[in-house]
Image (cartoon, rainbow, N blue to C red; front, side, top):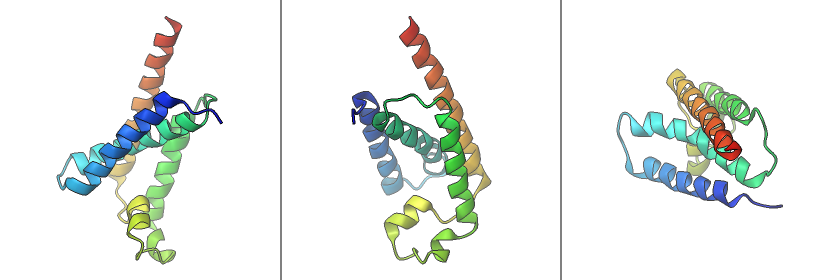
Length: 125
């Protein structure tokens, strides 16, 4: 498997930013909103770093996945699966449903499509 080093590097940078946000910020904008926007970009960069083939609708697939995780929070999936004692899984899956999170995932998805368009224009120049 050939890794795309550019995307892996971007993934690692965003991962460290996300960990920093989750660990050190307790604000009303960056942690709840920017963190949710970035998580879509984080997943995208990981997949692009691992899979060399371009997946045309990847941002939409990631948006669907993120939305499904959000609805799993609505159903209290962490409690249903008895994972509440696992701090890591509880953080990854989340425990609080919020429609605003889905809006943030959508914003992240739009950012990805803009990024893809810009990258395509740069590569065609």
